[in-house]
Image 1 (cartoon, rainbow over the protein chains, first blue to last red):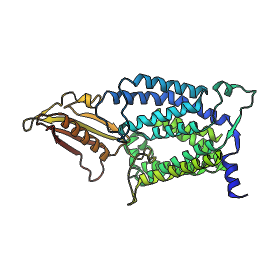
Image 2 (image 1 turned 90 degrees about the vertical axis):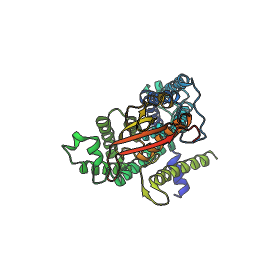
Image 3 (image 1 turned 45 degrees about the vertical axis):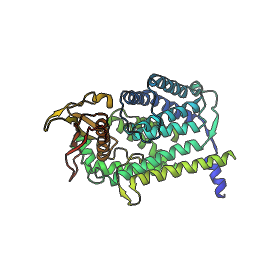
Image 4 (image 1 turned 135 degrees about the vertical axis):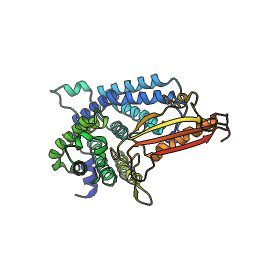
Length: 253
Length: 143
């Protein structure tokens, strides 16, 4: 089989649409519960301040008195995404408005926010059009869709995990020192050596990054990934990244 | 035609997602590691914790509150120190932002006083890192 045919069959083959639709619902729920309230807080603080440090100097400032209108539009778009009504437009709007808020001030940046916006942007490119009601109908077979959005989202998670593990190898707070755990999880490091926790985290992240690339390893990687996200949720608190991570795991089922 | 466009999109997306974090993380062209935004540096450093004081100096040795400092940045106070926890920015980025803020405030004022930001780093305390940082700008109205 030549490269062109292999490329076509990998990216453009038809796959069941339920995974992408379930992923869309999970991302929409995370957007409503965690992301929009934080964006609203950022907008409120932004409009109440006269000093800003925009990421790009040419970004037009947010006009005054637009806080409620923008929040309302974001909630409406997230609800549409959840229900499956105009999902691509809704995801595109949420990704664009989130990016705009990100760029308004350097204080708005977060790694989890970047990941969430990327997921929304990829949803805007996908055809996860099946409504929430249709997902619950057992009798009717769901339509299929092209595989490339699913592949891109899975690869995105692998890239993220690879770079976050690489960062920890070079960071003076991780590596074999485990200083991060001493700072952030003092109670935990009284029981387990911080260097061990640090090395285990880096190893797990590298393993997940690599194993998400190879289908035969998914059966081991998905439960491990779920435990990893659950541990983040347990030790750090309710965080958007853990929910987004679990949402992406739906695509490996 | 559609498939060519999508293939181009996939290729560009992956190229950007692979190269941008690498060059953000390993300061090009020196290839020295640094903490950077847009590089997937999740939890790679502990939260910065610091006390920051914003005030102005009138007569020598006298510190005064900066009037209406909350209108410059929402919920900021003066002259009492504010405890801030920072997750996503480095020490240098925090210092740059406060230096810009104090220059901005000084520029608005035309009173001849000196506007000061003072940061006391609480954690993390790395080797050879001073625990105190201060920056001042004259409120001449011209700077």
